[in-house]
Image (tube, rainbow, N blue to C red):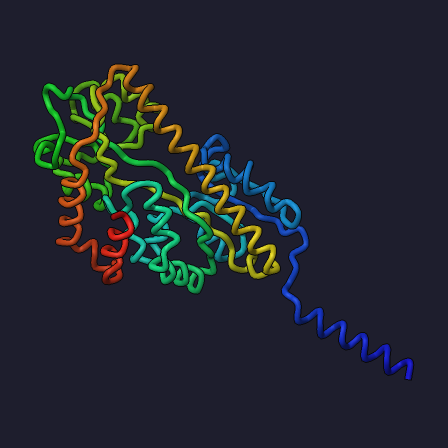
Length: 330
């Protein structure tokens, strides 16, 4: 009878253990990114995310594409070579064309709107597709910054209020079709050019302006060869914190909740730091002599969205999603 009791107890213990969620013992989280260790996003992950999951996971960041080539991170997560990356909507659109909606001008209005869109049920189908077909979970959204118009001419020569004011303006834009389309939608004459050539082109007048977030304007010292910045905020850029579904499934329910909160807290930290940096750079650029002002953003948004809706770019966009996104910004 003693033997039977012990056997039954052992069987009960085994069945109970099998019924419990899998517990990860010191999960290794290899994170690969083309960003440097001084980037606001990577700082937040190292200082906020990593300590928050340290009781069950070891965070191993790899910067400057030192582990996985840029553009290959999502595939590396799917194959199990890494557990985490910071993915762009442009990258995801290569796998799932519907994500191109988040690369279009004036879809996101600001950082708060961007976050509201990510957390809205309209994103559920997007997230589920990535998880089901690529085994990647999109945990949170990271704010990258707003692209603005940076022009050689001063406002007494050219004051930008609506897209009509950019008629004939040679605006350097990245060379892909989508970027060139956005330049035309803004009302300008987009000029493809390598980033390394932009400073000299602005200096010599080969182009009239360029578009980039304010940190890039400062880092590249474009303020030395330009006179004004029109705060069009025509693209509110983003990254997603992408995480391995296989690694996620190894965690207990409590650990999953802990990791999700860590990702959200890191994204919030990076967002606040980037917004603060943008505000500080407005003051810095004004001190450098640039005139900075906000044009009729509503007029720009209407013109740009109308251009997209009349183009082939929207063919992959799920029906009604743009309207839902716009409504979240009202």
